[in-house]
Image 1 (cartoon, rainbow, N blue to C red):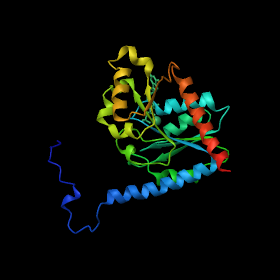
Image 2 (cartoon, rainbow, N blue to C red):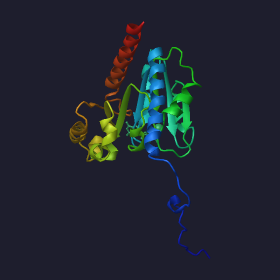
Image 3 (cartoon, helix red, strand yellow):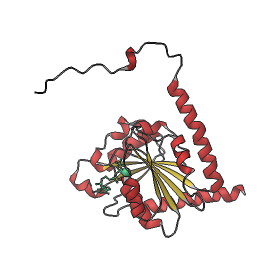
Image 4 (cartoon, helix red, strand yellow):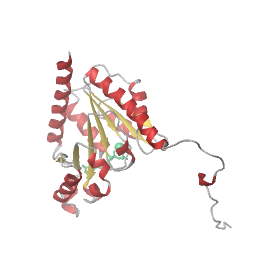
Amino acid sequence: MLTPSIRSPKSSKNARGTVACDNTTLHLLQANDFVADAIRKEMASRGILLINITSSAGSGKTTLMQETARRMKDRYRLSVLVGDLETERDADRIRAAGIPALQIVTGGICHLEAQMVWQAMQTIDLDGLDLLFVENVGNLVCPASFDLGEDYRVTLIASTEGDDKPKKYPKMFLTSELMLVSKSDLLPYLPFSVEAVTKDAREVNPNLQVITLSSTSGEGIDEWCEWLEAAIAEKKATLTAAV
Ligand SMILES: Nc1nc2c(ncn2[C@@H]2O[C@H](COP(=O)(O)OP(=O)(O)OP(=O)(O)O)[C@@H](O)[C@H]2O)c(=O)[nH]1
Ligand SMILES: [Mg+2]
């Protein structure tokens, strides 16, 4: 018969010895930002638009990557780096939509870091690419702190998550340029107000742009693709101006 027993403490707080470092979190972020700058320079020299896609788990990032691939792959060269704790599932889904995808398996880390993206960039074909998406690990907390050298940070908030998230997880919305209110096809069934979520998000970040969309019904997907096309053109123009 199984008998319950109180779990033994596993905290490292009681470990013996002295760890002679000051704020390691700060140093970690400084190292991240150094690599993020290297990514930014590399992408600038190639005129490739880099977009960091963030959201809670399951808000529809991969489904949107699939839909975007279907709509844009004949006119633009797209590729995706996708981060997850485990499995190749998202990369498989994106490849099935007809564009290259590389899975970054973090092995338990809850966000992507610039060093992971830099390493992945060395193993994919960047020549002639117009747009590289990075689908971040699904959560609104840790990925907000790590600059990946992106041109734009785009955050999805699904109608199924509740419209109170921007004020509860402000850093993600503060550091994003575009918020996508996703799964709009479910709005008639849910107590979720696009007006309220937009108001809260813009109180956190007055410059935040907003598109409401659904990968299922197709609502807003044209507007999203037009936004991407304008950003690709803007990036190419900076390359031409620099030559
Ligand atoms: N109704 C509806 N369901 C959607 C929509 N987009 C995605 N879904 C569903 O939502 C679930 C999660 O979608 P994913 O695209 O895997 O979400 P994700 O953000 O990539 O998830 P993680 O990578 O695990 O964080 C799947 O069952 C999708 O079919 C949408 O626009 N409408
Ligand atoms: Mg996904």
